[in-house]
Image 1 (cartoon, chains in turn cyan, green):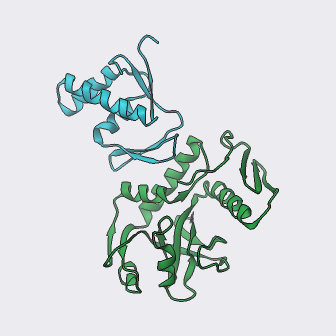
Image 2 (cartoon, chains in turn blue, red):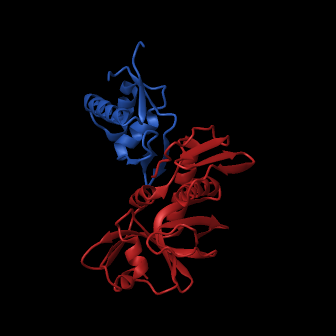
Image 3 (cartoon, one colour):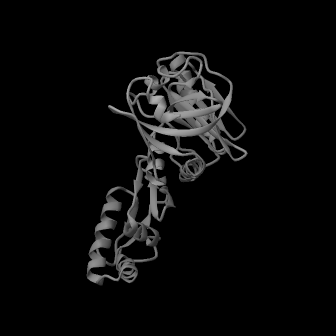
Length: 94
Length: 206
């Protein structure tokens, strides 16, 4: 994925925040996925209006890390959640 | 969660059709129709699907679990095939087993109850039409000694969901199930139970 891509939650994914972290029932196989704290933040920000770059900036602010590191982490998490079919990614310019 | 083979994809609150070899369940807003039932196994499957749909708003759900009643309290032992549900049931006093296979859990006026069901495993007993307040839910792990450990909410939820019968592809119903199970976790301890295959397992559970 690219920094200008825009991730959004799968419309059929049910989720809740439990003890500060997000749990999701996947639409694909109805399995429970538990996210860690940073992935939970990425998930909540992925509302289809923010690019990966904007989400990474939010991550960098929250955890006081360099933006380049936050962007790499965000892209990795988005890729992972997209592979699990929990996120859908709109490609930049598409 | 158990997925419905051949489950239809209705809009939430709309018509629902479930086909299993030997039976068809049609669920509409004002009733359910079961047809073409060819054998008891097909009827059993259809009843499980129907119950999961009817229970959800209560809230309630069906769980792969044995339930044993002691001193007016229900102890629910969840686990998939081979986890030890029937073993725990067989190690319990005669007449105390509400089910050794599928437990029906439902919240009524703020209290979670285990209900008798017609679904049995190895015991093959008749169901009991009664309900008992749930004291504790255990995730079964066979081991060399007996030990319990209360699970934090997320592992507890993972344990419950992994043993829940559920037959919907709709987000709204999945969210309803999440709410129901989090409600149970808030009011009833969910514990990991390592147990020996002898009657001493009750020393850890009760």
